[in-house]
Length: 567
Image (cartoon, rainbow, N blue to C red; front, top):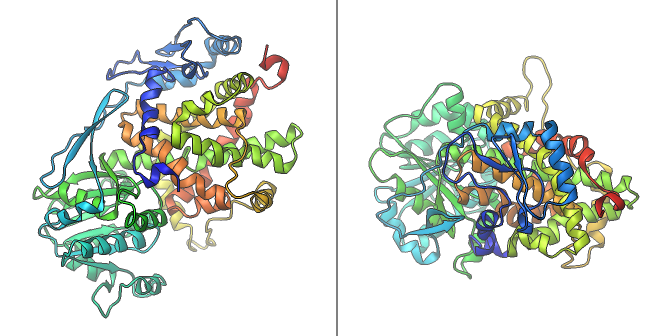
């Protein structure tokens, strides 16, 4: 696992946000909510630190010295009518930002500054485990409901941390009587005999803190009975804000006599457990997490959430809201984390083979380039370092790819965010989950495979022949497309009021340090299908949209022949 994960919030990766503003990759809207915001048009000038081209309110374009011929061509096209997508983003006032400050009676709060914005975090570590009893004051039993991606990791991490703290708090897993996961839970040490394994509602009724870690679709179907079984004054813990989004869409709300908090690790469950175990030897290893307090009935909710995060092994915990979390999370996994990167590599592989590359070279220059050297460079040095490491010709090829890809990517990303924001994407997940089983006389439609095409069969051969430690070539065109999509995602999140800590985790750290290494190891299905059902569904739905837009809309603007590109 890359350095930024094992060390928590990497200073190199987090510096990306600051470097964006400093080098004018995106012209900042600062804290203004005016409609006349400023957005850099989709061309790669900012990282060159030599020119800026901006659309104010989607209409005015200004130039400075260093505006390249290729960018001027793009600007003329934009002024002629290509600014529609940008105008849609800019014409909407920036959303109010989430308040990052919070009060804790147990843990030390630290202020950090990202791109000129102050935020507050709690630093984790095993040396803080002695504070868990105080953070969990009044809690005698923690019920973990579910054994999917997060359940095994969180239940074991909590149990081990509390044991290390000499706490008598019991962690008990709740599963259906006929659940096949009971065998796995028993193998992990949770058994009926020692009082740490039981039926779902039984565990809910007796727990002071209920961690609901079943799938999102199952939460939508089962939340009423689970909330109804909770003790008054107890606390509901979520690791995703999906349930809030679903309840809002059906006009429902949480009980007012319980606290509701969230701790959301920024990585899949297996990584949460593996990095926690690594942290036993290296203090500070782990997966970062956001936390949210949605309801607090007795003043303990913030410290309960922070204690939960520290017990999971999170090296850094930052604040969000339940609503902001589900919007950024569902959106991010449909974007650059899973769906977009899948669409990008499919489009690039097809492009390179059409240009005459062998299948193996096309795979190496698309997938291997992104999951290898590009991801490692972003993780250790930031996005700017990818560009700076290119030759003069490579930089110009990067610029052409970036310029042509930014708007087509933002078109899809903006639509995706609004589908999440409106509840449409959440309803889609719930309905898809119900199609997994037969109903209304129609057959069941479970998720299909996503790695059966020629491209991914070629990938198996490429990985088999790969030398140990090989990271693939730094293809300038691939890098330009990938970083353009990443930057478009960042800009949408920024305009929608998300904090930089959340933006960076949902757009960069989780991509290059948690997810791309899975695709590098075993392919796209290994990356996507190790994630939640919601993420898997979203990636399958949106990946083809990115592929289509980049191919159909981006290609008409791509200057790819050597004469046009380097004139």
